[in-house]
Length: 134
Image 1 (cartoon, rainbow, N blue to C red):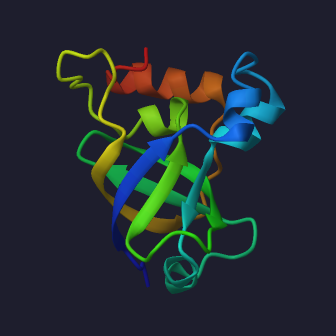
Image 2: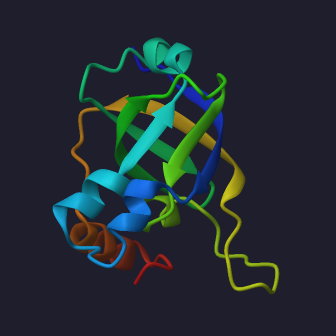
């Protein structure tokens, strides 16, 4: 049975993502930016296993990221660090400021057996799909 969680996605900078942002092809950046933080309640409701992945889908795209519990998040709110994985699911509209809306994106989340793509694979996939990440 597929459990689908409706959530609001936010994104932002993290210490790990910021510290490794100069080396976006590195394993450190991959680990720091390719995850989705969920409340403990939502994580458990999705029945994600330790080290498991989730598929995050919005009106703008979808991406597989690793799932992490975050006791600081309330149920219904997910967090993906700024980077290519968050970019895959936010809209291209910038409101004239040059930065997409990284807060308040409606999303659906489900447990996934698919693996998380690295940066090169993610960009190639977005290019094939005609996305903005090309």
